[in-house]
Image 1 (cartoon, rainbow, N blue to C red):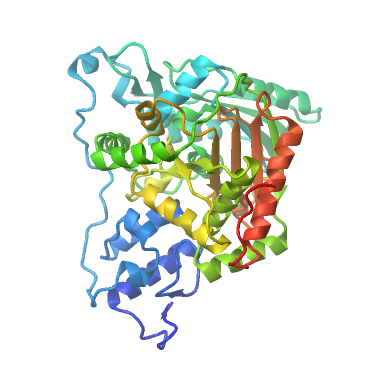
Image 2: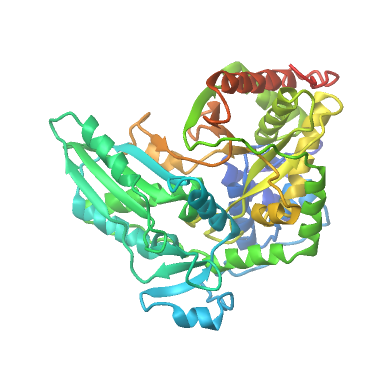
Length: 534
């Protein structure tokens, strides 16, 4: 792999430091060449891949900060200085003990002997639990069901679940919000997820699968780990349905991909009587809690979000709420995907930011030209070796309000800059923002989803295509997910709306506005303004 520069021979361009970064980026992103002015995110990178690139660069002697990578996403911007040979560094040690002073001595003294360790619940965990207690205990209880094309071995599955529980603290964690001076996460010494099995070979499996979903959907007692349960219905000698329910407070979407990938790799090994491949060590979860505490105490982050909150118009509280959802999925046609890619290459704007700009423009048009606001779902995983393999809840909601001014290219770049500005303060909890401002700041969220780890599972042949079923309940009135298929260029927009707030025809109108704004942006006519209203 050679670093590429438009003005010089690609085999001789760049300093040693730049060439090292180019090799790292090429390896992480799976591309053949990386130019000095190629944007990491336009090439297909995201926050998870950025963590991998930073860790790998560190092992090769080049230090890069994650926030710097978001602010200066080309090699020329990141490493503009004179040549600097990579220095030898130790691989980041993720298993060093962490000095734990986040739990008071009085609380520590009250911990039962079954608890291995404890640390504070995050603001987002507390928020999810509060919303469920206030509205419906089924909120933020996710159920996933997948068709697995392997013979079922109950002993191997139990061993795989036990191995995963030993590796990931989140799978042994309960959350207590009443018995201590603060809400605490309590990590049990042992808490293997329960497994229920059903035999349905030669019978109509539909009734059994409905029973599995009902079992996985049963409410959890948050004070008792694990907050995960598993059901299997054996369909034939060569396939079974794997259904599992978990509380969102212990597992976000990327973590679910980690869970199913590691579970099935261990299951496959145990079923064949072999030992799973050794797993790399994971960072300590306490470090994530410490980063959030530091953000809450940061004057710069507090002032930044107070200023952003002052710009955000008031959010109208719905007069009625429901946990039922209208859902609509809109595939983005191939020709539009090509135009998004071309627009991104021309303007050096990542696909995620183009889709976010279309979302904000749609909200601008929907509300008659008002300042568009959304809650951007942000990842706050640790920038350490293994940070991308942790199971837990590492998300935050970042309110973004971007005035729709100028032409389409200017607007899209303003959206990208707003993302970059917010990224420096991404760990400041949304719950703390709302507390400081005295009101909710968003009623809609936007999330760009690209679970590349799913590719590993699909390539194994174990996962039957089209068999994934997801059942979830969330509290935001409107949720928009831009979903990138991990195996192809396929892209779609998924809309989920509270049935008490939005009618089906209104959701269809919202979806149509998103398609229209995406079409306008990707016409590549920079002089064309975003419309004020439909």
